[in-house]
Image 1: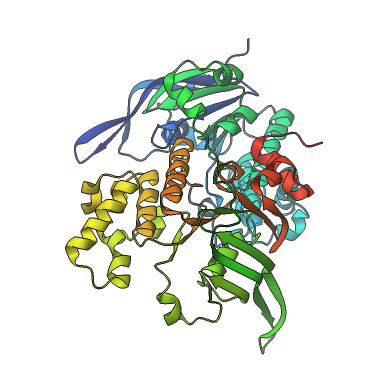
Image 2 (image 1 turned 180 degrees about the vertical axis):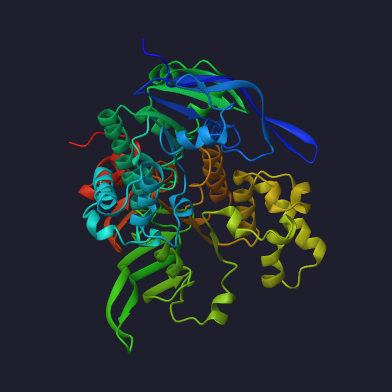
Length: 534
């Protein structure tokens, strides 16, 4: 049997801040053989990323290692000098991070960023470096790489940026690749492409991969072995298939059962219409020349009809750039559009900002990133009560506080936490706060823009259950925007599939998921549910 290329033996990691020491990783052991993929799985805060960063000794000075060793090809990383580490980092061991946009330098071209690695580690420059960059970009599946050399990160899609990150990681032909949640922010089809790419590169180059994720669907697709982490400990490890079919630890069983479940509301054609749109268009002008004349348009939303009824959920799915969020922003009159929009019987498409303000309490929005949408300077109570002070001026402070307490209880949060601030809560709790802020105004319609994409699987399932429960009790109409078809299947009774601003398929969720008509919809569903397409 081949000797492991990486051995993590009895490793503990602690952080000392203001004289107080906290153990983040507690006596973990794992190994990776040549050409093998090992997945490190667990929810946020389990210690996955800290463990992976320690392999390259990238943790800040406040970190210490009370016990254990990290052996790469028999040599202990933790006792290596800075000079020895520089030879290992980027050469023998490389890393792909979760968010390529923050990992890539926005001021440098793609060619410059990959060439820099080649020059630093291989001494390559000029024509030889350019040829190697083109070879790497071709290897990771970027079309016409010669035309992309001068591109900046912001000029590329999320999938293309992640491919560039992989090209940078593979530039020096490493023996071990650490991939920290490399597909979390990607659409399901792009996610499937990236996973296929990693497997292909592994086969060709004999690469070993440590894959960190909270998505068990990805683990089953890519990993040979799996280690499950909870609160800094590895609670179970073994061959991936046996972990999935015969899990032993309660936490593993909990993770495996954490996918969104339950049924969406029954379709009811007699329910009152809350929102209706006809021939919706959002076209952004493309201006060129000295006089900035409009020469064309980006047709972000192009001729869409939809109807949303009380107590019903409309799922809007599609890849990034398909126009999903633009459609939602136009329907809530947060951006201008053409076409007819009727909200509770009123034609609102020509409403002014002032006229719309009177309707804002009846239509609310829950955004993708709860941390970004909650003011860090306001307490939770102030955040939830803010809308009440604008729309219900006649309420006393005691009445507002009572409504805030009721909203927090309804979303499963302790009312006593209303005096705390957003940074003191987990991601799932912050999203519950955002939902409480929306429902406290007793709206008729809520637009939910990717509200679960940044959350762990089990928290995702809890938020889906909460949304379904609130809908049943309050007869809410939801527009649920997502690229996660599993969540849409659990919530929506009607679905619109968008691509490049247009509807490619529209109908009941049952019809869309069980007998999709277009190749695009079939590809989305196959990628989301790991179905082999014919």
